[in-house]
Amino acid sequence: MKSSDAQILMVPGLSGPDEGHWQSRWQSRLRTARWVGTADDPVDRHGRVEALVAAAEAGDRPVVLIAHGLGVLDVAFAAPRLNGRVAGALLVAPPDPAAAGVPGYEDVPRDPLPFPSLLVASATDPGCVPAVADDLAAAWGSQFVDAGDAGGLDSASGHGPWPEGLTRFATLMARL
Image (cartoon, rainbow, N blue to C red):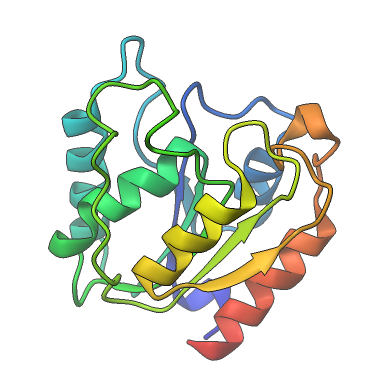
C-alpha cells in the first residue's frame, strides 16, 4: 500500500512531540497524515482512546497508525474497536505499563491486535526495558524490532528525522 492511499493517524505520546520530533516531521511530509488524541494533563485515557476510535471511523481510506510512547498503549486499548478500519500500525517506544506512572494504563490489553503491526523499541529506553517491549510485541502479535542504543526514540535521544524509522514504516506499508 502507498502512504497516499491510506489515512495515516499520528498517535502522540504523553506530552505530544516537539517540532523536531520524527512524528512531527513525518506528519508534515505525509500529505494524508494527521494528529489524533491530545496532550492531556492530567492524562485522560478514555478521551485519548475515544479520539483515536473516532478518527479511525471518520475516514474513507484504510487507516495506518503511527504511535509513539503512551500512544502505543492507546492503540492497544482502542484495538478491539478498530477491527476492519485499521490496515496496520507502526508502534514505537511503548512505555512499561506497570512503571509508566500514568493512571489508567497499568492494565494494558494483551490481546493480539486485529491488524499487522511493527513494534520498534530501544535497548536503552528509560521508559521501557527491552524484555517488556518484547513481551508486549509477542502478546500483540507485533513484529519486534530492536533499535539498539536509541534512548526513547525521540528528539531528546537525537531522533529528529529518524531515517531508520522511515525505512521501517516503508517496510510495513509494503506488507499491507
